[in-house]
Length: 131
Image (cartoon, rainbow, N blue to C red; front, top):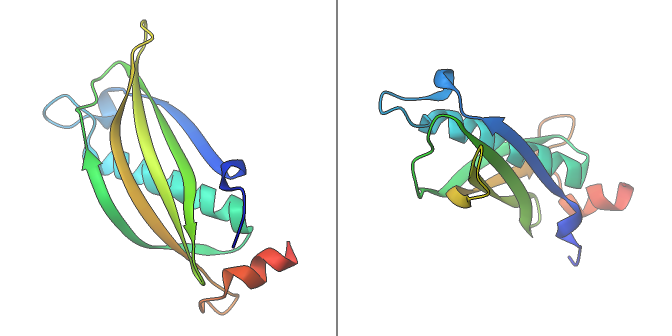
């Protein structure tokens, strides 16, 4: 399938505040995974305009700790479309609030499956033909 995946990206910004921190005063990994799954889900939905479910996560890498008082961007993009599954790469970038320093801090891939109204897998190509 040849499609310009660049048109199907999702970006959310968050401020890292105390209720998102772990006992090390850095972003709690579970909070980051929740944000990543949400962005991946939105990205998959925007591409298919169909019911999608998370099938798996893969290669989640925590590259650097995320400190309180920073801003993060959670950015998702489609990287592969299969018969019934879509892979979405999600990166989290951290920015200092009062500096233009920006760096990738977390990355991972999320796989979603397309479902019909009976919650059975459905071919993505058939969905895209309808849209």
